[in-house]
Amino acid sequence: MVSKFTLKAAFISLMLLLVFLGAWQLATQPRESTAVIGGDAEYAALMGKGEQKTGFPTPAMVGKSFVTYLSDPFYDKGPNDKGIGIQIAYSLGRVALGFLLATLIALPVGFVIGMSPLLYRAFDPFIQVLKPISPLAWMPLALYSLKDSDISGIFVIFICSIWPMLLNTAFGVASVRRDWINVARTLEVNPLRKAFLVILPAAAPTILTGMRISMGIAWLVIVAAEMLVGGTGIGYFVWNEWNNLALPNVIFAVVMIGVVGMFLDLFFGWLQKLVTYRE
Amino acid sequence: MSTHFLSVESLKKVYPSANGTPNPPVFEDIHFHIDKGEFVCIIGHSGCGKTTILNVLAGLEEASAGNAFMDSREVKGPSLDRGVVFQSHALMPWMSVLGNVAFAVKSKWPDWPKDKIAAHASQYLEMVGLGHAIHKKPAELSGGMKQRVGIARAFAIQPKMLLLDEPFGALDALTRGTIQDELLKIVQATHQTVFMITHDVDEAILLADKIMLMSNGPHAKIAEIVEVTMPRSRTRAEIHHDPQYYRIRNHLVDFLVNRSKTYAGADAETFHDPKNPPLVRPGLDDELAAVVALPTQQSVPALRQVVNH
Image (tube, rainbow over all chains, first blue to last red; front, side):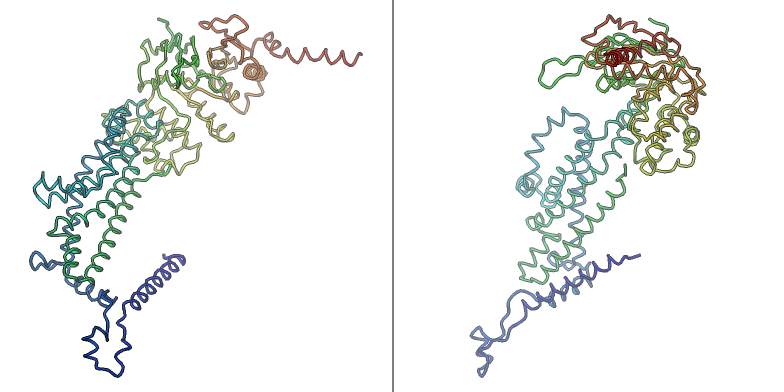
């Protein structure tokens, strides 16, 4: 059942969208030049007067590129002309791979660091220095040592998504309630069972929060990374359309990036809800 | 070595201080023993190290000096032989009630098939009156019900000894009474050996065979051991009709209010042998009960004098 509150909010959202589109339309409307009156229209055009283009696309033009691209999202007409679905799939694939690699390392390492205050302290300076480095700064090193632009992109995703996951896992594991650990100890639970049945579920909400942050960052970074390495992906698509000066397509791509990012976040939010427990 | 089921010898705990100067020991020279089937309560003010003693017995903490032996073996680290009920129930919120107890049962008997574990766990939940709630999550239970699950979990592994750390401290008086009755029934039926911390004098008298009184920390010691001489078949409804009840109760309250500060501590006034703390039976001993009442008797003549003048 949809509540009255939700309906009201949806109505206001719709109004905001319409106001925004209206303002956009007004701002980009082709204007009649006053100098045309009584003169030769062709002459006026030659003189740079008459109907002026603002250059920025109107909502209708952007709408047209929405229709064009969404009606056939998976076409493939060579390296510079692929459907938006294929481009997003490339980006998602890179993000998934880099993110998966980061998870495979961040979770076990974070677990170990979280269990041992000594290791926590020992690892801390490295993490603190490595964490604030912009992932794109790794790009030259990645390109040089990996010698492959595709793998370099995945590496950049890997390096940017590892830190929030690592830190959150370590924090979550380190702050598991003493009582639960003590229960496991008095029951002589073996270490593996303790790790998977006590510490992991106890720390899961914190770990998932880390993964959600990581995924958000990864999706931000992939666009920039693909602009650099080129070839395929939504980032490359944006850059390509910019080179074509096809601004409606750029706007379309920007909206698509937002929508996909939203769904990724929703997915991780749903996972988070699954593992959250009420005390 | 002694023949007692559990014996504690010269236990001492010093917590390291922040600035490096040695802290005084929280407690030292703690000697006591518990026989099989005995229910022993320990009472003392906050900070005298009751919980530390319990944690040492549970194997969760290490003493700075001294030893504890159970069943002729030294207590080193936690063991399934000692079940612990924590003050904060310590249930895992992501597991169901049954899951929590089954987790403990599976830890004790890893080879049991699933349905045997479930049956065993539900039998103990039934025992604490939670047969109807086994599939609920702990968050859906009241405080008293959670603590019952904690008790069921501790009993379900059939430990040789049960350690209870103020299990009813966080409960309201009515709930506490009901669970006390249940615990009493279960303990009487199973002859479980129990060591329990409490702040509640009435609870101690109701449940215990012996009550150990601790003087205040630091340098806390076991000041006295009070034997509860009333018959074991007590009920909460009738216990206060026994004339012994108030004598014991007065003795305990008097200790906590007046004597625990100076008794056997660093600045003890009287000689005290920590190895053999005096065993008193205020319930039977009329003489001792009279001593306890002494301060009031002294003030009466003083009042008379004022009237006479």
